[in-house]
Length: 382
Image (cartoon, rainbow, N blue to C red; front, side, top):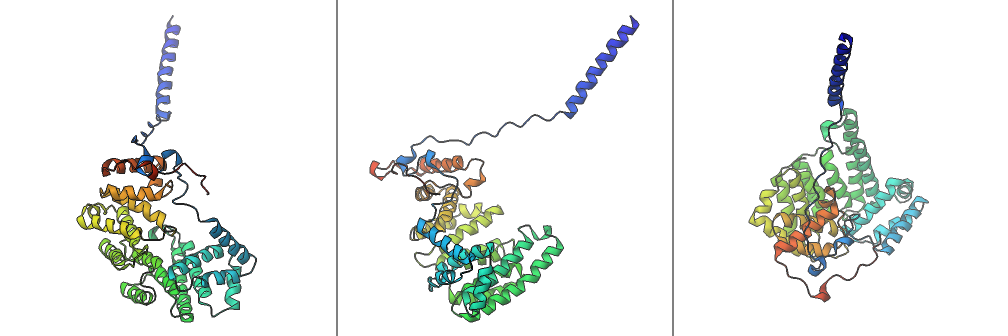
């Protein structure tokens, strides 16, 4: 009997210990799934918006026209086969439309990023060509940044940081030499302005570069984006200096230029630092957003910078409670929602549609006449 009681006690104790161990080693219960984003029930088409089931989170805007894609592919195929002449002619055809010329140089830069043998052949065959020399300098900048990476400076190994910094002066010198080949061309100066941050240029040095660039292309979009980066707080300026720089760009931009959109990029930098709310709440901030909307309405609809700018404008207009401005942008954006801030959400379609519905509700918009509503869905080309 005694043995039986002892056996039962051992079994009971073992059971308790086993349960205790299991409770200590068991995985915690999975967290409850995040609630689905709120959804507003509204007839999107009635307000000039694409229906929710046609929203596409794969892109920020429509793809390039087929003939542009074919042209770009033909230039790339020729270059990779060793023929650099189509690339040279492609850039030269932009003439003195310096923004367009930079866009074309950027395409060639991406082609050279895959295989730059054709660029070396171009430089050897035509050493006096400014475009080729500029591309070579820009490739040097890319090579340096590839070593440094995108981490904060204190996170980069010292060896990599030293290599990065040692390569940039040579890139700037190469860009300076390129600038002598065509003194009117601002592209080498864009490379220099871009490189100035990593090369640790002091503000006085940067201002000298900027003056050289502005003399050649005072409203160059890419140059202003790079300049804004230099003056932001994470580099060599402050929130105030960066904002002032973006406002000057906006205030001096000619009609039809996307340059006022630089102000939206400045707001994005402020948002990363969580210092944008007071700007958007101010009367001046709201007025500037309305002016950006008016300026972008004059830009060519096929300008490839427009989709991203429209998404940003819609986002900040919502935060500034300018719901009519936001609704106007959502109409112009169409079905494309593959851009920040919507892609920061787990479900970009839901986030985008919620913002659109909120804009409809809070703007006091009235349904459009049937003939003004979006037509039936057409096949989208990716």
